[in-house]
Structures are given as structure tokens and as C-alpha cells.
Image (tube, rainbow, N blue to C red):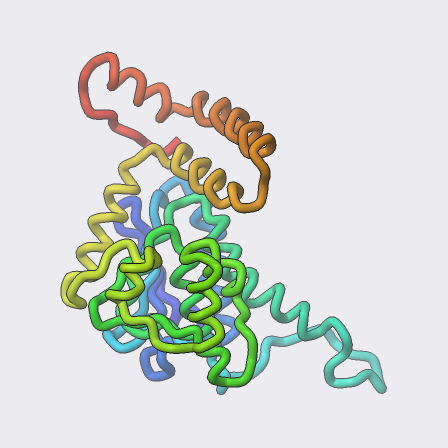
Length: 272
């Protein structure tokens, strides 16, 4: 089922993940969610993949969070007399579920582009903003819908949003739960670009192809350092930068970049 509703296509060096469940608002069942995480983790190791585009089918929804109508994820067998839910079950479900998905986006060693074609709500909003580039159709919107349902945000929303838009704007979005139109998402720095819906796929493809032609290992380490910068002090950040530089400078693409500079020609990077 997840293979049908989560579609993977490799076109050149660009991997495309499409959430193809418009009949359920592109909401993710547990197996669909895990399938995306698996694909992103596989893309990190696959030298043929040098950029990833994530989008939804149709023009109404990018992803509306968790699909609540399907069967639950299977769990371990329980001994006789055990309760249906024991302490730790819910936390484990969150950590291995949506938190794993968001971590897979953040930790992917290839640039990940969200092509937000429609509404991104709840976990779907976090899925979009976890990506390295957020491109939005002009009719799309983001909704931190949790407060409307009487619950608190999950999928890393309270971690991600303040780092992107600042603490007070993050509180506004999370505590009020109002729709965030694409134009406003761009104004506050959450969306990199807003385009007409008809142009979204081509815009995402052009950006992905540009990234895929770049020095993939250098991009991976740059992404890692930027993400790490919020977790470390100056001393640790400088240490990690030094080691990352040493690693990247031994890559074939780094050598090609220097040759191209000396020879006054465009570099041709291969991704390793």
C-alpha cells in the first residue's frame, strides 16, 4: 500500500517523492510515513541521487499530517494480562514515527526541496519546513493546526519554527493555529519562493537539477554544519568546521573544483 501512495522516481540525479493520496488529503498512514523516511535514508547512501524533491499529488494538499482512519502500526506481542497501552508506548510511537520522519529530512545527506502544492497542515507543515528549500504555490498555505484540535504540536514543530522565524512569530503560529498563506510564509522567511501553481513543478525541478550538479559532499557537510550551528557553541562549531573542511577537501569534487578554477573553466562535479 505505501509503495502505491508514496511514489519514488529517479530522473537523472534527482529523486522525486510524491505523496499520492489526494483522496485523504495526502495525509500519511504509518506505513506511508515510514516509507518516506526509508527513501530519504536510502537517498543519503545512493551516489546516484544528488537532490530530492518532495511534493503532494493534486493541487489541494501537500500533506495534512497523520491519517487517522487507517489501522495502527503493528507492535510487539504482549503477555497475558498486559494493558493495551503501557507507559512508554506513546513516547516510543512518537519517536519512531513522525520524529523519525522529520529527522530523516534533516539528516538526509542530499538537499531536500519541498514543493508545497497545497495545504500543509499539522505534521505536514513540519514536513515541509524541515526541508532545505520550501517552494510554495501561490495558493498553498501552512497551518499549525494542533491548537485547533486541543493538542500540542508534534513532529518537531516547537523545535523547528523558532529557528526559522524567531520565537515570537513561532508562538503566534503555534498558539493561534491560523492559516499562513504562501505570500506571508515568504515574507517571514519560511518559504524561499512563491510561484503560480502551474509553475511549481518546473521551478522545483530547476532548483533540484542545479543542486544535483553541485559538489554533493560539500553540500552535505554544509547542510550538516548549518543544522548543527543551533546546537553548539562557537568552539564546537569551529572544531566541526575544521574537520568537515578536511573531509570535503579530500573529495574528487574538491579536486575538480580547484582544477576548474586554475584552468578557468566551469567545474564538472560528479558527486563524490
